[in-house]
Amino acid sequence: MPPLRFPALVLTPPAQTDNPLSPEQKTFNRLSQQIAKARQQMSDWESAMEATRKRVLKDLLPLRDQHLQLRIQLLVQLDTISLTQKLGKADNETLSQMIARLAENLMTESSDPQLQEIHDRHGGPDAEEQAMFAEMKASMEDFFNLNPEAAGDGKGSSENPKAWTEEETPQTQSQRESQRTRPKTARQKAQEARQAEQAGQIHQSLQGIYRRLVSAVHPDREADPVIRAQKTALMQRINQAYGENDLLQLLALQHELGLMDAQAVHKLGDAHLKKYNQALKEHLATLKGKMQALQQHLAGSLGIPLFAIHSPHGLSRDIQETIQATRQDISGLRQEMKRLAQPAYLKRWIKTGRRELASEDYIDDEFY
Image (cartoon, rainbow, N blue to C red; front, side, top):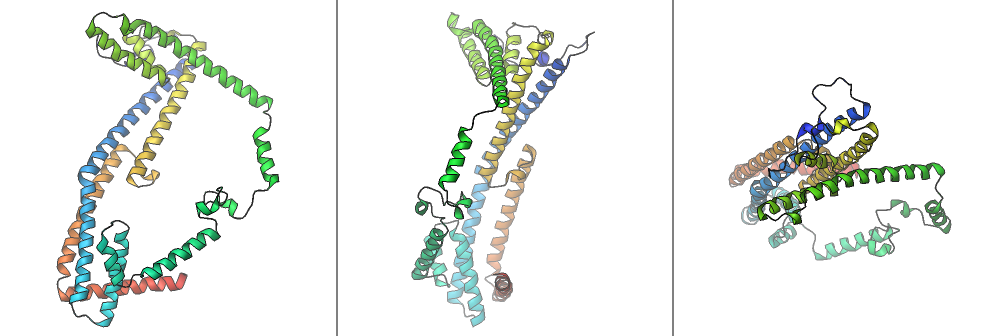
């Protein structure tokens, strides 16, 4: 048995015809092309995701870990300078503030115990202050009902901000229950009936094709072990296509097995094609939903917003740019650590830091 293929012959109209295509035939061709395009896009995204995963594991994560370790080394170097070198009072205070701030940032990324020691040594809050801050935070959470445990039934959780200002009354509860139990209108019932009828017709069409395929390739009827193995693999593909309501794959399988000629689809009547077109529309919607879920998963894994995911090619480019930027940061950190060993550069570095801290203090005083 030849390898399974999904030829385009069953998706395209006849090369020459005296009769123009009907609207349903045109719709079938258009939806077929859209599905083919969506499949290719899915394949491109899946390939890009796999390549990205390998690149992140192989290159980006080791570089980020190296960058983090270098920042810790820089912190230790600055701490050593503050303990061993004689600096003026203003320079000492500025250096301590910069060390405390760097240590605070690093503690969000690393559990290295020396970070807390350095942070506390350079003006970080002591245990009593930390306990006081935690108590104040807990009180504020309880006051605004942000604490899930204090909220109890969840009415005051942050997921329901409206509950901060409104308590549910028996009247509002009754209104909500009334909305849930409100009888459906005749129009709603008719629409649901049409949808159920369409679903039943689509299922019947797919089921008919599926049964013909199963009857033709069922592996239990094959005595030759080699052919049986081939038919078993083919049966798995048939089951997958049927399980995904993939009409085009089922039609392609029929053509592959010689159960229909290349133009059989285009000889069907409009009534039959209308059912097929509804199945294609639903399958196209499913493919688009899967693609969106794939992109959302990718954005979440990389820690970037969904709108930043443009294309598979753009994803590869962005990862390369991130890797290159991380390498440049590592190189810059190493050079900075060497220069900080020079007293003249250290003094200029502290002076620059003092200006930055003063600017931040001004902003805090002005707006907060």
